[in-house]
Length: 341
Ligand code: ADP
Ligand code: RBF
Ligand code: MG
Image (cartoon, rainbow, N blue to C red):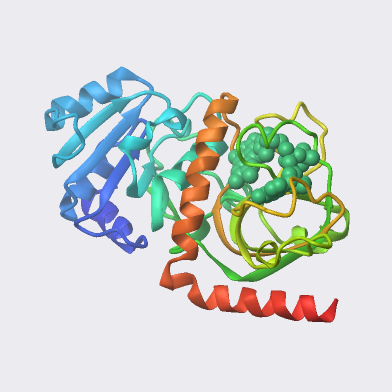
């Protein structure tokens, strides 16, 4: 397909503008890079596992500084799922070949892309049908595309299959807000005792059995919101107030040896004064935003570091004016539940 045609397609993708930062992944990146440049985009990173692809890019565009603060076409050699955080964030990630720039799986590359793109940005799967690496599984057909991104924080924005090219556009939600706040409540039960507390983030596990209906509509992953504990007799009033909370809903792939049921684990951002533990108490949580999908980390240190970042993000987002209306709704829901009990 001609550069101009690609430029038109890219221009239709959400939030692709001349000031955008683009990451182009895999083989066959040359036409996409040209089209991005035609749109005035100057900050482009090309990544691939194979050095030959990158050698070609360098030959075409020269090698820009490696610092990442200079405009131009830069390259990074490696598996896309291992792209260092400092290479992001980007406004658009474009996958150009069926291996999605990784030796793991398309799904893991998509997860990485969703985490690399800024809110509101997009992930594109783009290929010239005439390429010699066109295979029956790539581009993914509509159904394949839906299952490829199921549960990830992105929605199918558009999908176009022409005579000469295929282009699917997926948009990462423009904000972390949920469509509407979700109430999750129940008894605090014992977890696997795997040491959330030792990690510095004790997690109150809510008995998931009665929550099945609410959970059915939610993606696994990390959410933030407000929690209110029905405190034991004699605990100070401050403990019973509304507190910020970050929670993980899911299967904990980093530590799950297999077969363990999903859990709802809540780290409440409050230092309880009444006591160390509140097993058996009733806990109400209203989730107002979604941070990220669950990931499988290489080790516990990486998981702990990420949870710390989740806590910081929770503080930031809950204080942001863009979520204020959801906060008010959450407070109203919790007040109503408390007075109904
Ligand atoms: P478990 O594996 O049983 O869930 P954790 O190490 O995750 O054990 O500790 C969770 C327990 O710690 C909660 O059930 C609760 O009783 C207590 N706890 C104390 N402070 C907090 C807090 N700020 N957030 C969550 N749980 C807390
Ligand atoms: N476990 C994972 O395997 N992957 C995750 O991405 C993940 N994210 C979490 C985020 C938060 C905010 C919290 C509180 C927990 C998360 N967990 C995750 C669960 C974690 O594995 C679990 O709490 C500890 O292993 C202790 O049981
Ligand atoms: Mg726990």
